Image (cartoon, helix red, strand yellow):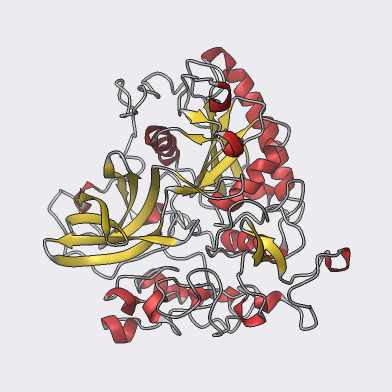
Length: 519
C-alpha cells in the first residue's frame, strides 16, 4: 500500500526463503525479499495491487485475528507460507465486527516466482501468479487511474480527471522519515465544493493534532496531507434513506444498526483510496465523507470519517484501529473473543496481556467504581462482550469519545512512534530492546520477562497448538503457534524470521537456529 501493514499492515509476517543469486534478469537486481499488497475479493478472487521494496513497507500493527493462511507455491513445492489477519473484517463501531466481501492485506515474500494461494481453513479462496521481478518503487509506480475506471461493479467511480491536485501538506513539518504521514481524501465533494473540503479537513486535522498532544505532546508527530478528489454527487450513499450518490470512492453509511459504519460499497473504492495513498507515500489514508451525519469505520491503514462535530475524536479513535491494531472496548453488541493488545479474556493475572502494568494490590476483576478511575486492572466489558472480556482501565478513547487513550493503548502509540523505521531497512516489527522489562508483555521479543507462561490470553482457546499465537504465548514457549517450526520456517506472526534487520533488533524467531540453520 499505500500504508504498509502489517499490516499489522496489517500484518507483521515474514517467510523463510530467499531468491536465487541475482533473481530474474530484468535489467536491475531483484532483492532477496519484497513486499506486496494483495486484494482478496469474494467476487473476483485474489489479485496483487503492488509489489515494492521492503524499505517502503510500513510496520503497522495487526488489526485482527489470524484467520487466513497463504502459501507461495512452485508446482507442488511450498516455497513460503504463513498466516494473516483476514482483511475483510472491519471494525464496525456498531457492536460487532462486519465481514465485507473484500479487503487488502500486505505480505513480505521471498523473491521467488510462483503461485500465491490464500486458504480459509481447507477451502481455497483464490490464487494469483506472483512475479517478484515486477517490483516497483513508489516513484516508478505512478498509480494512474485509467479513464475507463478500475473495475467497479456498479459504475466506473474514480475517473481520469477526478483527482484535481497532488497531495498538499496541510499541517506538520517533519520529514516523511520522522513523522506519521496521514493523507486525507475528499469523498462526496463536487468540484465546486473542494474549498469546503479543505476547510473541513483543516478544522478536523487541527483538533485531531490537539487531541494527540493532550496526553503526550504527539500532535506534531503527524504530518497531515490533503488531496482534492471530485465526485459527481454531493454526500454519500445512505441505504436507510434509499439514497445513492455517484462518488469517487463509493462510500456508504451502513444499514440499520450498522448505520454509523461508513465504508466502501465495493472493492474498487478501497483499491482507489489505497492506490492514492501509495502514490503519496502515506502511512494512513483517511477518506473524509461529505456528510454531517456521525460515522466512521476502519481497517488496516485506511479509515473513513465524516465532518460532523465529533470528526476529530472519531479520527483519533479510528487511528487506534488502523495504525495500532486496537479493539473497541464497548460492552454491547455481538461478543467477539478475538485477541487484541487492549483486550483479555481472563481476569487471572498471568493471562492478562498487560499484567506487568497491574499493581500487586489491584483486585481482579477490578470493580467499576471511581475509586479505580486511574487504575490499570481488568475491567469487565470489552470487544462487544458484556462479560468474559476485560479492558485495562475504566474508560478509554477506544470505549468512549472525548476521552484520552488508556495507559495500555497509549503505550501502543508510544511504541509505534519510538520504533518508527520508515525507509530504514523496511519490514520487521515495531518492537525493540527498549521494550524488554517495561511492564507490558511484548511477545515479539521472544523472552520478555513481562510475559508469563500461564497460557490463555488473546485469541484461540489459550492452549499451545490451537493455531493462534495468544497474547501471552511466545515463539520460545509455543513454536507451534508463534514460531518458525510451526510451518517449516514459514510463520512469524510478530515480525521477521531472521533477516539482518531482525537480528539487529532482536526480533528473530526463538527457534531460528535449530529449525532453519541460521539466526
